[in-house]
Image (cartoon, rainbow, N blue to C red; front, side, top):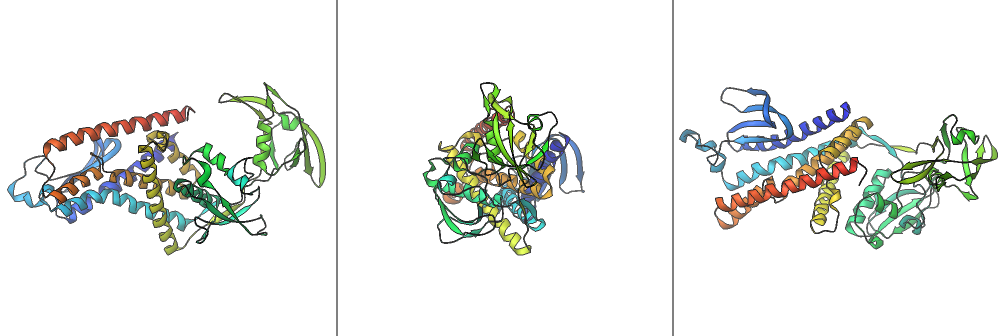
Amino acid sequence: MITTVLAFLLTLAVLIVIHEYGHYRVAVACGVKVLRFSVGFGRVLWRWQRPGGTEFVVCALPLGGYVRMLDEREAPVPTSQLGGAFNRKPLMQRAAIVAAGPLANLALAVLLYASAHWIGINEPKAVLGAPPSGSLLESAGLRAGDWVHSSSHDGVEWRDLRSMTDLRWEVTQSLLHGEALHLLVTDRAGHGRRAVRVDLAGLGSREIDAATMKRIGLGAAFSEPTMGEVKADGPAARAGLRAGDRVLVVDGTPVADAATLRERIRQAAVQGRGMVQSWRVERAGQVLELQVQPRVVAENGRELGRIDAYVGTAPEMVSVRHGLWDGLELGARRTWEVSALTVRMLGRMLVGEASLKNLSGPLTIADYAGQSVQQGLTYYLGFLALVSVSLGVLNLLPLPMLDGGHLMYYLFEGLTGRPISELWLARLQRGGIALLLMMMSVALFNDVARLLGLH
């Protein structure tokens, strides 16, 4: 819990400081006098100021920040200081100051993604677990143990895949574009190279959730159906199973991988009773026949079988690391791709093609922040980059109260030669506040629903 809170606060601090520093730095470069640079709102906890300079403060409520500039619309400005007033600056300079905040977040994302590529990370190799029966991958002829080397959206230009993370990203991109995905595949040893076409366009859905991924058939990376630690006095131990046993067959059906075995175990619960299963296992070169009766547990209104043992081995891992320029290029590309993905998802939610369940709020961000920190520095950098992109894109939306809303006002001024009227400005601001409150309410509701297991 403490790790989650600290990771969340660090995430907010980094993103807010970078965003507001973008506004501050460009404002100073344009000759605007900055009165206050605030991280957070409410009661001031810490302040620092050089004589006649900007006041830097940290406030009690860390959900945001602001840069307060000298402006005649907010308070009278002495004649001697009019040259440093924001409202007296040319239109292009005002627009640049406003745009600098979200652009700073996007620039930060590039550096964070690049840093993650430079540091490197161990990720599961792009070797598939058994696709569920009837899934798109199964229909395309893919099987447990198939190693996906590269992908293409048009069958002409191919992109190497280093890990399951890369494969999931390519599947997500194709799903959102409503297009087929071409894959170059071999067996686990690298033999039998073949091309496979996965018809994601025929799925009839562009939702990115667990149910859609199951229909596609993309689950966990391949794991051998081998027994790990066996709990004493559990169903596995009573059946005579030991750590290291490789499961070959369950009830006459071959077991392709650990995911298949776990599913067979879960399905053994029938009307509150665990059904006895006939297992064939290999142990130290010998094949044994065992009778296993899983116990039954209730989870989320479902009855599932359990054998009280760790099922499966750790997937094969690969080290993904890039050099200086490759890391920067990949960082810029990933920032662009995630930005485009975010805009498309927001657009689809707006027209009703995607569920509002995709909106996340502070509770989900805090949860993911804690999880990523526990996984390691590279995972946290990737998470921080993702949130930074989301913040940058969100603030560029043409909504009143956001930076994009102010840019919309400046576009109107540039086209008409006059600023938007005070009456319309007030109306748009009120509408913007209402819309933002609605979005925040939906996001918070989704957070709570996820915590309660309702989503």
